[in-house]
Image 1 (cartoon, rainbow, N blue to C red):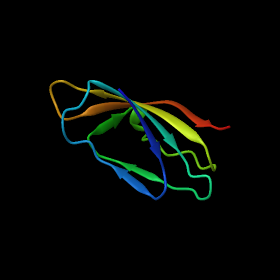
Image 2: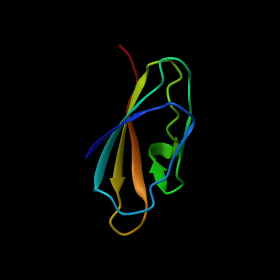
Image 3: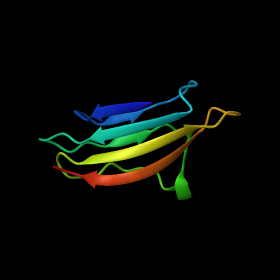
Image 4: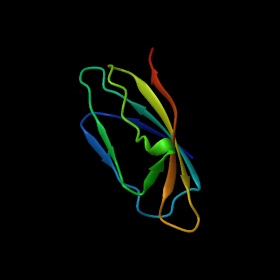
Length: 85
């Protein structure tokens, strides 16, 4: 499933329960201010490098999360960052 998140404040993303096995999230920075994201600890990032939101106004990042079937963990992958119009 796909989700679109428009940042209008610093945001904490917590995923505790079972969801779709694969989730795509497009995250867009505000056009007026820059905001940060804090991800929940149950997301295991590729190379242990947690996603840090692009710091340019209107920029967009694409994140993919994969649910591990045997635990409450997700694999997190940064697909691309800093798209802009």
